[in-house]
Length: 81
View: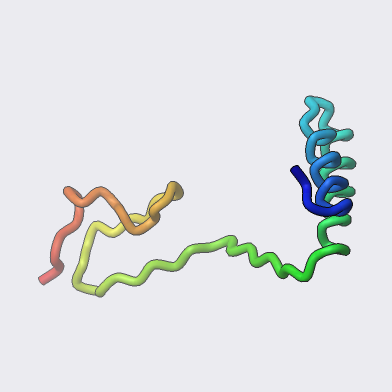
């Protein structure tokens, strides 16, 4: 149950955005996001890339797209001499 009128409006917009009509979804989601942005003091950070460091002597390191990115196929890692 929403605690404020703003939360109720955001909930309503998010429920309206649960449609299969893509244009309606984008419109309602954007309106809900705008209400949220106007009402809250939250800064959202989006990280499009993940960087993982390894030592140069570790070979066979091929990052993957799924999480966690650091767990490569352990059976393919080797030490470079």
